[in-house]
Amino acid sequence: ATTPRVVAFESGGGGATGSRPVLALPIRATDGRPLPGQLPPGEVPVSTATLGARPSLVLGSGSGFGGRSGSPAPSPRRMATMALQTSILPDMDQKLTLVDPSIFRNTEYFFAVSVDQLPAEVGSTGDFQILRGTAMNGVALRGSVTAAPPERKRVFTLSLPGARGHLASCCPTPGNWFEPSTELQLLNKDNVVWGTLAPKGGDRYCVFRGPEMVLTLDGDQDQGRLIVMLGGEPVAHAAKGQVNEQLEIGVKPHMDPVLMLLCILSVVIFNPEDAPSLPG
Image 1 (cartoon, rainbow, N blue to C red):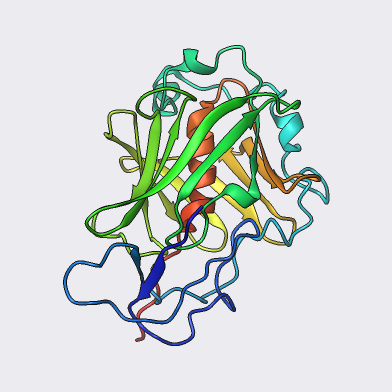
Image 2: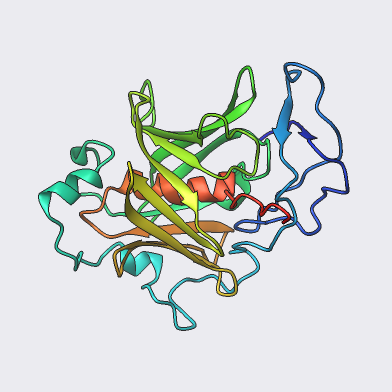
């Protein structure tokens, strides 16, 4: 992964100290001011209004190994073997589908990503592999984070190995391209907006289809985990593994694994934050 120079809108020591790290991949911003007009190549706009506002999910500093210490969800490995308990009506089932379900039919919904490969710092770009199965013997998906001109807005895509085009993508919503973003948009393979993901205080995030909230993501900074909830049922669980510095992600069968991976990894990569409170 590569990390372009970051241009901040306010100077004032925006280094790693006090920033919001995610999954042991801290956000680091250098001091500086924007240049007039279009940003030069290699520079990424960053709003310093929220940098250093609060600590975030730090799966690397937490205990990880999800499923221990009174976790509200089974470990990622066990999660991938469990049946969905919530009865989903056809209308909701359609709302929770991002890609063709046949793509991952009869596949174990347990995945792992090397933490070192994830471009999770502000402005960083790069490619990474998402491995499948407990044996980690194949590449399930490829992830890529690029900086789109002219604003150098970062875009995260998921694609099948060797395939042309992508299955899904995520980027800051229009007009919200300074990082950390306050809202992300989730797009399908045709680059049509599927929904949005927004922080809702603390380490909680919500996924919306239009005005309707369909999923929540709950984090635990101390224990180092991120859990996707459908109503009151955990349906996906991400935690740092015990070996090889891997982020393990387990998804319950019947859930769309691409949607789960897109939501979880978008939180890791973009680290969205609530808009700062105005002094009053």
